[in-house]
Image (cartoon, rainbow, N blue to C red; front, side):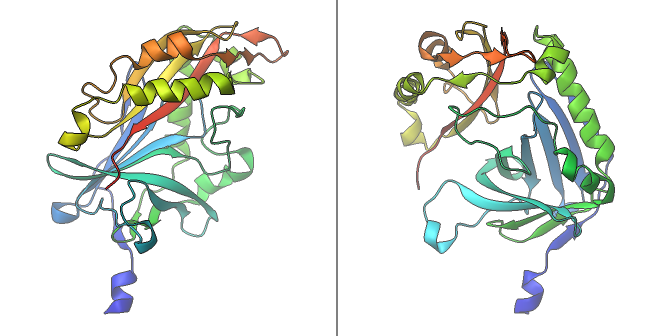
Length: 287
């Protein structure tokens, strides 16, 4: 029985991929299985990037805290492209809930190492780097292990065209937000937050935590997309709520516009350019 309990739950699709090209994101959704096993997989991108937001919604979207991390609000989750492609990633996941079930949220899923700090430059890449693109041609499922209550495998079939749709969508999204898509994809350096500015930003964002939220046990994950001008100042600011942000977003953009300073992005010739920057804010209450 112990051996059987360790076998993953394997679910087949019950719908096509649904695509939603919204003004602030590109999203694909597919449903798997039915009844108590029903689960939905949602994958979103907000800018041209190899980093994805992934959400699982359903009965099996339940995390368990390892004993050594009891009380943590972030859980290590292993996501693999299977079977046997050799492509996998460790990500930090959060537990949530909706009216009809559980939700696992992975805000930044990337299948190759990238800088985690806003103070470090990161390249512009598609979903997978070139040396891993062949995995999309051979993969047939996405597998979840680690802190998930029960290992899970979703039989997705080939995903190459699915991720191409996402990459094409984010390319077009650059034009929709007023940037040159070709210049954005070809930039040699993204905006990099000036460290002194970042430390002040962290204090301001923390100070804007809604006063009633801890008592109500409310948490939120915010995606913030900035347009950084060629002089390093913040122009436009858009809050993209991964969760129901309620009053969590109040004043966040004011803080970025008033405090954040960046080294501007550089174009293909190394000249300062107007470009985008995406960051994540997590308002969490430790258990």
